Amino acid sequence: MSATWTISAARDALRKGEVSATDLTMSCLAAMDAGDGLNAFVHKTPELALAQARAADARIKGGDAPSLCGIPLGIKDLFCIKDVPTQAASNILRGFKPQYDSTVTTKLFGAGAVCLGKLNMDEFAMGSSNESSCYGPAVNPWKVDARKLTPGGSSGGSAAAVAADLCLGATGTDTGGSIRQPAAFCGITGIKPTYGRVSRYGIIAYASSLDQAGPMTKSVRDAAIMLQAMAGHDPKDSTSADIPVPDFEAALTGDIRGKKIGIPREYRMDGLSSEIAALWDKGADMLRAAGAEVVDISLPHTKYALPTYYIIAPAEASSNLARYDGVRYGHRAALAAGDGITEMYEKTRAEGFGPETQRRIMVGTYVLSAGFYDAYYNRARRVRALIKRDFETAFAAGVDCILAPATPTPAFGLGEQGTTDPVEMYLNDVFTITLNLAGLPGISVPMGLDTQGLPLGLQLIGPAWGEADLLNHAYVLEKSAGFVAKAEKWW
Amino acid sequence: MSIDIDTARKVAKLARIRVETGDLPALAEKLSGILGLMEQLNEVDVSGVDPMTSVTPQRLKRRADVVNDGDQQSAVLANAPDAREGFFAVPKVVE
Image 1 (cartoon, rainbow over the protein chains, first blue to last red):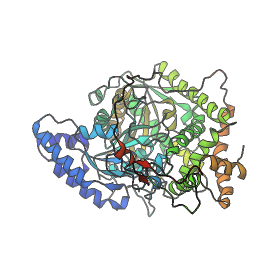
Image 2 (tube, helix red, strand yellow; image 1 turned 180 degrees about the vertical axis):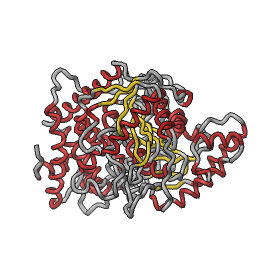
Image 3 (cartoon, chains in turn cyan, blue; image 1 turned 45 degrees about the vertical axis):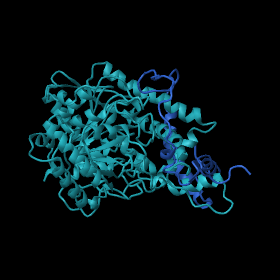
Image 4 (cartoon, rainbow over the protein chains, first blue to last red; image 1 turned 180 degrees about the horizontal axis):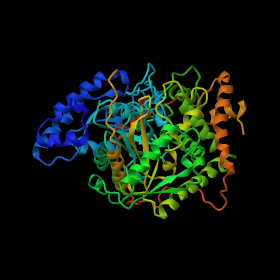
């Protein structure tokens, strides 16, 4: 069935006329409907999909269709699409229909991609398990016993949908690991580009200095194809970089001879599963066998990334989420007689935001409040500069790419983490969060199954604007690992 | 440093989120746990390090100071919980 195809295989079949975009889309719509047990798609757009598919078929007949023309994708619920419900998995945006499109979806649909619907996530992208969602959690298609497992978060619906072949690829966003951790948990590929590579316009903001959108796909080649369509300067996002976007797919030569791979010793930390530690060594051997030199490096401030992030991200979130006040869009609480505007704000926000979002807003409010700003927020920004400097030092010493685990453990059961202590959940991001603070690109590549049969991923980290070379390293890892397993259908 | 119930109440007020009195102790405890994580940063020597302000050194783009959009009243109000006569409507603000 064609929903199982990669983007590159579907592109070739569409161009050869072996399948029509309409048939491909129908196949995905059927898979999507049969996939309701995963709770990945939360707003379906079949009419939009079929209209886009028909347009794509006409364009393909015309002979100059871009790579994504006719490719059915899922879109994370964080991206605004005109007239399509977009609520960042939050009750505070229930009923919200954007009056404009995000730049990413404009570019994807402009390239001919087909929108199947909106994908589940953690509320406002705050979470690592997709359990902080007003829609209830998305479920990982991988299953080894009676438990339902988390697909990871925050882009959990995106990862589950791609891994379960409900769509050919999906958009994700990554503020602290929200593309790479769910990709690793579900056995797919996900890349967080350099901060500024992809426009944030029309993506509901969580922490603006960390947020970056990227593709989640079934292969490294697909990630290259999709990132190509998403990337580029946008005058509507003042932090988007006005620099040329290289041809990412052409960079996949498979030749990494003479490249230098750094292994950061600080990432070998307590709590890292022994299987993932062994896989990390195996990944280094694969890159060495492909002709790269593997060297030990030090990123001394790694252990401070988590506390730094959990000051900076909530601080930015408390400011960004101040806009949800019950006035301009979304939910407004029913008011009692005599309630004024302050009661309206307070009741609306108490009803509309889930518990984790409320906590992060309040933590952010606290660290930015008078008397604590220097002690918390400014100190965190100073440590952030040191974390960035660690990476710059490593790359300046000639390292081309850094190899690290993507997550400390494989996917865990829904309801198993963070219920009493939110910090337990935060530890999931320990290997991914450093990059967001430094603004660097990183990619999670599926490497194999652990002894219980759950997917494990490794992460490659590149220098700023080095996505092309990074994707090529990931391509080598992908070819060496030869991961082809799929979750057995139970949903 | 831990957050007491009064501080939790104050933070909730500043954040404009209503928290029932009975829920304040649990909130204070969770916030304290999160702040405990942050205390680790006190071990780092940050002397002489400037706070990071942007991930890539860049000068913000400029554009001509001209109107490039407008006449969007109906789109702006389309999602309002309460819009009347071309305005957002809110409870009485001034007595």
